[in-house]
Image 1: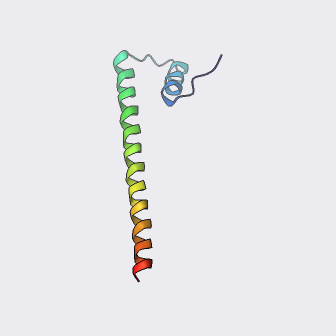
Image 2: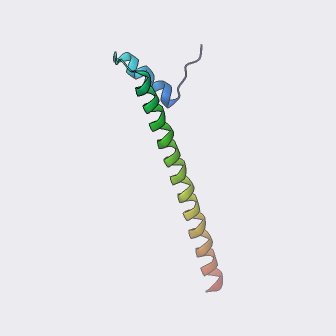
Image 3: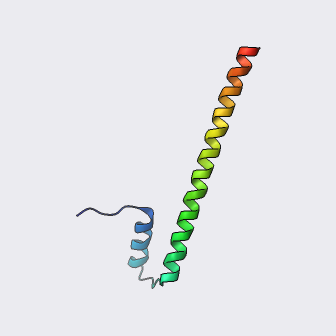
Length: 66
């Protein structure tokens, strides 16, 4: 038997352990928040990757031209 260790599953397990009576709308809101948070995290990582590539290529170009 393997345990599901995804963040969504873990949060729902913690809610069950604390005897929190979650309704279907609360679970949907939690899921939407998690998806939104992951999307922002991915957008941030893409943005930082673009910045890193820009800084690396511009510094290499400056060294070659100067």
